[in-house]
Length: 487
Image (cartoon, rainbow, N blue to C red; front, top):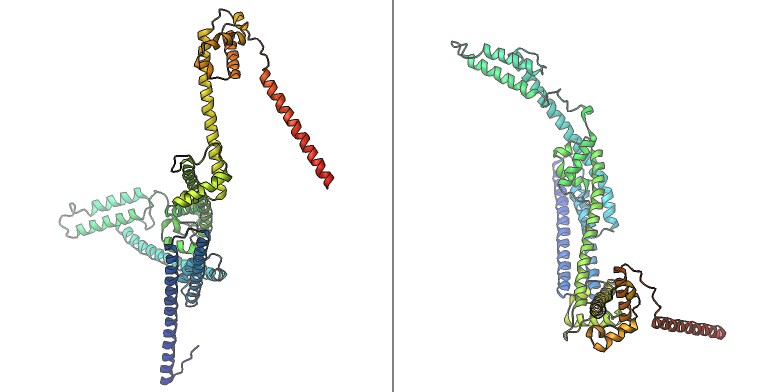
C-alpha cells in the first residue's frame, strides 16, 4: 500500500511509484502471454512434426499421446496462472473462461478446480447483484412509465369527461361519441379552434384504448405474484434452452449472460428457479448426449466390423480365399495380419484383437451355415429327382399295393437302368426317400402307412460309436488310476 502526503514532491514520487507498479503489472501479463504463446507454438510444432511422421507402431502412438498429454498439462498450468492473475485484478468472467479452457485440456487439475471453486461464489454474488440492480432499474422504469401514463390519462379524462380509472370500453365509446359530435368541425364552422379540440378528443380516446388490457379483462399488475405460473415459466425456459441448443457442459453464468434479456428467461421470477431449471435441463441433456454418443459408437463399430468382414471375404493375389468354413483363427489370423502389413492394408487395424477374433468366428459360422444350406438344397433337389424317377417306374392302384412294396424289389427294378437320378443319392438316402414316397402315396389314397423297420446300418454305426465311447472312458479311468498311484 502506498500512502500519499499533502506535499507536492511526495505526491509526484507516489504517482511515479504507482505508474511504475502498473507498468510492471502490465509487463508481467504481457510476458506471461508471450511465454505461453511461445511455449504453445513450440509444443504445436513438435506435435505437428511428430504427427507428420504418421506413426504405425503402438510405441510411437503411445509416445505421441504422452507428449500431447504433457503439452495439455503445461498449457492448463499457464491458463491457471493467467486466471489467478485476472481474478486478483477483478476480471472474474475472463478468469472463469481461462479456468474452463484449462479444465477442457486437463480435467484432473487440482489447481484449476480450486480456482473454479473460489470464483464460483464470487460470480454468483456478482450475478445476483447485477440481477437486483436490473430489477430495481426495471421497477423504476415501470413506475416512471406508469406515472407518465397516469398523468396522460388524467388529461384525457378531463377531455372526455370520464374518471381517470375508467376501463369500461362501452362508457369510453359513449363519451367519445358525445364529445366528438360536440367538437366536430362541421358543427362548429365559425370556430377556428374546433379542429384542435376534435383532435384532442381523438387523442384522449386513443390513450384510453391503449391503456385497456388486451384480453378485455382486468389490467394485470406486474408486481402481482398471484398471477405467476412457475410451472409454465420453467417449461418455457427449458424449451428456450433447447431451442438455443445449449449443451450439457456449459456453465449457467455464461448462458445467463447471453440470454438474460430474452422473454423466456425474464419470465422466471427468481435466480434460484432458473438455476434449478438449468440443472434439470443439463442433466436431461447429458443423458441424451450419452445416448447419442453410444448410438454413434455402435454405428461406427458396425461400420468397422463390416469393413473387416470385407477383408475376410477377399482373396489373395492367387485367387484363394483367406477364410473358409474350416479355417481357424490361430492359423488364419497371423496369415491375414502378415498380408495386411505387407500390402499396407488399414482394415486390420480397425478392430482390436478380441473384436477381430469374434468377427472371424462369426464369419466362419456364417460360411458353415451357408454351406450347410447349399448342401441341403442340393440334397433336396436330388431327392425330388429320385421321387420323379419312382413316379415314372412304379405305379400301383391301391394303398394296399403300395404298402406291400419293398425297397429291395423296387431297387432291383431301377438299378439296371443306370439312371443318373439313381446314382446321385447314397443307398441310405435312396431307401429313406423311397419310404417317404411310399408313405405319401398311401396317405394320398386314404390308407395308413405301415411301421418302418429300423435301419441296420444305422444300428451298426450306433453300436460302433458306443463301443468307442466305452473304450475311451476306460482308458481315461486307467490313466487317472496310474497318476494316483504315481503320486
